[in-house]
Length: 255
Ligand code: ADP
Ligand code: MG
Image (cartoon, rainbow, N blue to C red; front, side):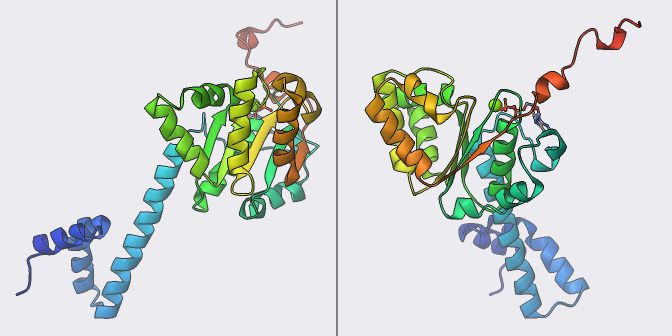
């Protein structure tokens, strides 16, 4: 017995091919109009399901990443950032550091594009099918401290531990006590050689020790972060200040 189109759709749905299920009537029409062979029909159907699954996965990963905003690398003006060459940026965009679980550390004063670069690379990694999480150090520490009893913290930390790339923004923005430094060490240790980390900081590793208090933990954290890492120093003047929007701008006084 040949099922109705509705029955076939229900069957596709049951086999978790929900995208095909939805589009089946339109595929059947196209098959008739274009006189597809059986083989062509199956090929079109399966290719469509595969493409939609990929798109949905990327949408899901984008949601999970929790980027504070979306900034693409195409919007990054290398003319404004003399410490990064076109070749270096191209190499970073190839993402082979990610395949080898290398870390990237962007250092430099505020406003030079550290967060922009981190988000831009994160977005490209997601397009390649990778799982990425963005978190500021200010958010990460309370999350680690409340993991035992807050369900939301557990979920977010699970995504961080399972990610291919973890972006930790503004490291060492805050001083940590011994317990916090310990929890951070455990996370870094878990990610070590399993995932890549991008860190941004306006302080160099030589100053991180002071902020983490305990020299032993600091050394252990630095060891793991820097073992397989590319440290990129960004300088130049702050893009924020240069392109500062002023409330007086439009009515500036003429000399
Ligand atoms: P940081 O994280 O180093 O403090 P951000 O990445 O937040 O700086 O950059 C501040 C702002 O300036 C952002 O809106 C960013 O997009 C922009 N910006 C910084 N550098 C560049 C650049 N080279 N090209 C384009 N935009 C830039
Ligand atoms: Mg920043």
